[in-house]
Image (cartoon, rainbow, N blue to C red; front, side, top):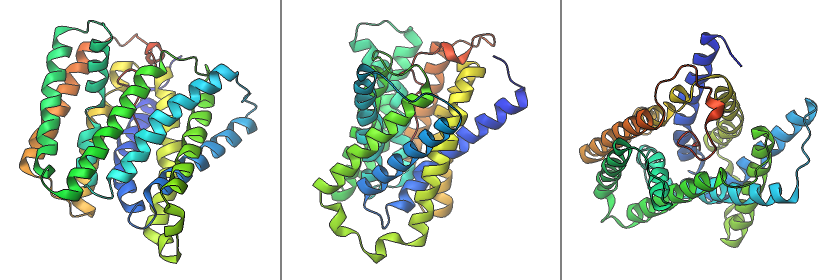
Length: 313
């Protein structure tokens, strides 16, 4: 399947900007909306909207019990514990720092592959070590600051859950249609978060102040742009563009998040954190170049689920 170059770049810019901006959107949303409730309702609504769109287009949504179980596992790991914990972390850390930490996910996936007995290229292994050193530089400035340290720990836990979910997703019997799989992953991950919000007493915190205009608008942006438009553009790119081009979002998204945080939230990452972010982005760049050589004829759909291409918030 081929597509006009202009359309490919439009979709790529959407993924660059939209996914990079979700960290900013989350930060604004959780200013007044309880984090688990914000994340759970976001994914539940997005899943239902996507299901309605697919049904309107005549796409069959029925899946097997095995596929439902696999979707539940991936949905909880990626969206429930992964992105849901990002919402929690951003109540305690800057959105730019969250994005820097999330940028290490491709390197964490490579580390898991090493533990599983795979043998990535030497450049990939070296870049992984360098990127994890960059992660240490990012988190070091906040390690001694109570709430910030907790936020950093939660964010790292979120990336580890996302990494595990991405790693397992290509080993589980997910629905063959990625859009159908996303319906179930978002819906089940959202349901998990809604239950978790009840367990942790977030519903008791809901009041008139919860639905501040800025937070509600940010939540709507996350539902429509982050979960629907961004994913649709990404899924389309996986079918029509070389994987080596698609995965470049991994080192553009953190830059967008850092810029938005500094411009609109007054965030000022420390020099050490910025140096760490640069090291992480460089390491991801080297790893991607090593893992996905530049082959213009190679379709992105050849990339298995769970590769460094699988990342979004």
